[in-house]
Image 1 (cartoon, rainbow, N blue to C red):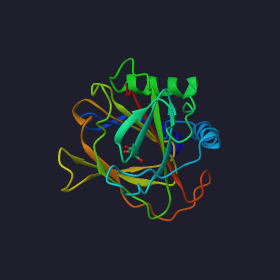
Image 2: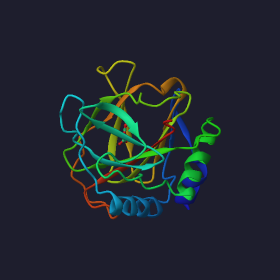
Image 3: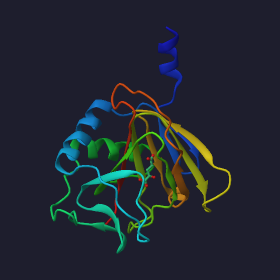
Image 4: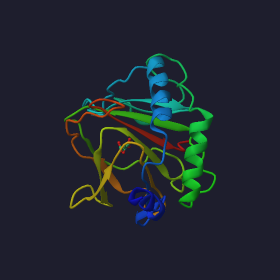
Length: 212
Ligand SMILES: O=C(O)CCC(=O)C(=O)O
């Protein structure tokens, strides 16, 4: 009974700060994870390097019309995987639709992602603070889905350092940042060792963007 009451009074979406919207337990985790597994079967996770030649700790691959890419030539979007020369696996239509609907609820109508970066975090791995700024239109939000192990997403604001606003993210959560929060520095704290029924000790994150 208490559980039912909680379901009724918990809002579907919370605006945590201007432009930052959290939908707790919003997506069907198995549906999204099956999409990840199908994409990874086509292009295995890999560690890219920064333009300065440093290995990026979080392994990742892309789906969509274009994929975020980094190597000695710089950060950019690529229409084809530079390693294999093949197109990225498409973002399935039902997944894209779920993302579009969530974005509209947060006040971003007509958001149709053309790129999804899939991050894989192993225990001990963190994502350093950065801004997403390789996209063409900053009026379009970023929509991020978490699967498996829980992590702390950190929002720093306009500068990289300083005190972070910490947002714990759990499997099935969907986070949107756009508008005044579109170009904030953000990162993910070092992943703790965990055992999640979906992914074991891994955290998977899907970041949907309109890049081109
Ligand atoms: O893993 C996350 O929650 C965030 C990922 C992210 O910020 C990125 O891929 O740019």
